[in-house]
Image (cartoon, rainbow, N blue to C red; front, top):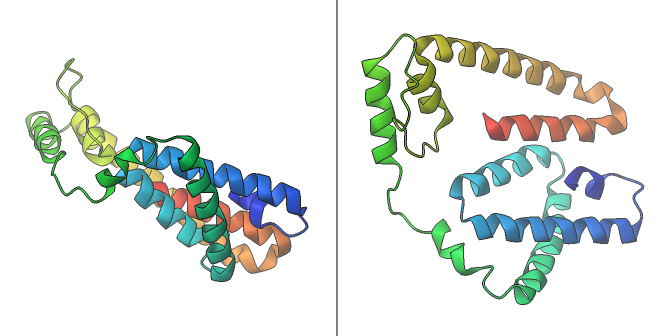
Length: 177
């Protein structure tokens, strides 16, 4: 929806509706209390808007207004906002357990039920579940993804109006790496 919001030629009512959707999506992101999700969102938007920061500022102000409006409708929606500033370490136990599991079964990993708690780290989860074999395929996929993103970024100047869509793709994939 952000791509459609900043694309040239969109009607004003369409942009207002999409801005409301972005604000509501931000409300849902705050509701989850996911610091990783918020970081991925900020990073992806930064990559997407890296060549048009003024549009990012306008979108941010617009979405913030809709976020505040939506938060008045849903009274408890900002209760989990304090989670973003909480520095409690709630991941190290799961990470240590996955690392130990990887060290115990380094080549192929293990699929013992109940052996992994919440991970919140895809790389360690792959190492624990699939071992070195899984890390090899993950690394291979990341290398090819980065290569294709590099090619897309290099071809961006020849895409004309579609360069905005190229920025969206770059932002999406950069945020999940």
